[in-house]
Length: 63
Image (cartoon, rainbow, N blue to C red; front, side, top):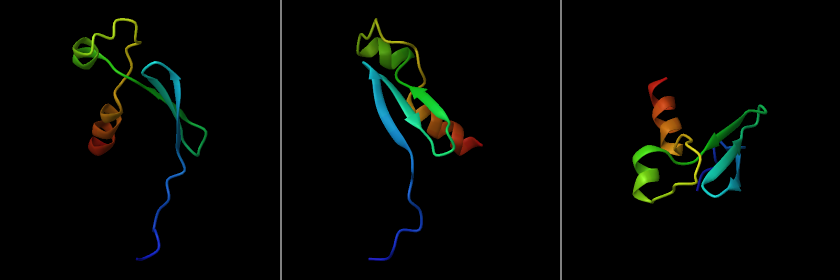
């Protein structure tokens, strides 16, 4: 097996319930969780409206 050509240095921590916070190497923090139809489907009435992790993936792909 070849050596890895990239190692991600990000970490993710649970804040509360579905709220997560990712820390990137440059000192940037990103909060994510659930919103909209996903929140309604799972009946998460007390959860904060935050972007889903896939929202960031879609945004990065389009950038």
